[in-house]
Length: 328
Image: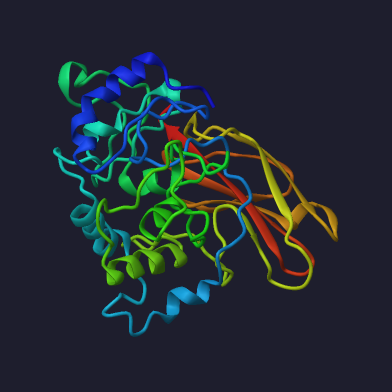
């Protein structure tokens, strides 16, 4: 992962006073890829990795007496209000669009903005307001499930939210006693206080349910509790590994043009997995293909593409990337 450029550091100073007021700790750039703050955004990503699942998806459906926690929390109805009131997403907050400042030379990964709006194609605030970034606008839900946090935990990158998988979701680390990553280490969120247990449980249930939206879209956890990356034990033996080779993460591709999809699956007991053992899905359109290689077009939008490998015992492993599909 490339280090933060001096240009980017200068841009980010626009939001320094705002972020500092939220309890962030500032320091020099660290050795893992340019982190000028200790907290705001998590870990800089170099890949999804293979993170062991935090537990079964059954936990999401068994919230019951959680003090009014929705049985199946929805992003727009239940999660956005929590993020707005506890973490801040207005112009005077550390998670505003001004602090985002994502640029193409940094793989469009900015400080995490929690504003519920599609942002990213331009810079906001100060003398740079309105300048193009070379990145697509991304809605908040897409930013959470697609982007890697800036800070790394012992060299391991995490996405903010990996549907179905608490352990792989850095957002939950930040509200659930860590680990707080980076150098110097970041802090818990919300800063200076403990999140309301009901709100934390709502976020937990939402992630384990596949990060569902009000329109019904979500990742199918398959009753396993792993999602986006990592593996699950559906039977005996060890879970397989999925290795998504092509296309690359965060690429921009034209709509309705065939895209080559290439990947591999390997299982400790079964060896190489092929054909129907490798299933490719888009969070927008569902299954797009099977096997180690095929071509398929995608519609306009931000697609989270997941390759899932399943062994003969029903164990699964998966890897995901994000593709920005735009008009030709």
